Length: 269
Image (cartoon, rainbow, N blue to C red; front, side, top):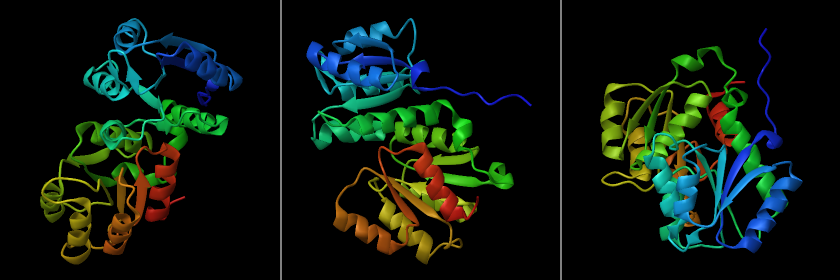
């Protein structure tokens, strides 16, 4: 038997993008305390993008604001390059503005940590990094997983890519992607699915309307529906739950959390 591959925090390579030398020292020290010693620091977006051309790290940790742009712009640039589109990205910032944070959530950021952050939050984010780098750890223990059909509904291409990657890492390969609820309804009319993963905010037909259609008008009214959303409004989320979603997961999310939710919804070990 081939032994399973195992990696630890000490095996990780990290690129830290932070304009403040003081903040660099603080974050590097936190990383070293957890065993991460292979960290390269940059002070702006341009130098970070140039620096990773030679060697793509396992994880990029970024501030939000630089002299030449934002962390949001940095993440979007990474997602447009085939070499770095899957690079794991973590934000460390006190920024709370929706216009900065929502695009990052859509782009599949693995964690958003405040300044200052707790060591436990950093450890949790690093564990999420390992989950992505060792996908076999999150594979579903069910023989029929390769036969599962999943519909992913999100108007963000990068969000769909991120969700597909998580599902693929779980062993779920039969994934159909659509950009809005209207197209999802057409797919549901023609195909049966074992799971629907949908965003909330979408043009034409949103996640709440899609859920209502599935539960009230479709021929597969009992299909599990997982809503992955950056919406934090408790009233709106309560309305969505009343429509019949099986579970709601925040963006950003942990692969292990998605696995546990899917496992519960599909009643598998």
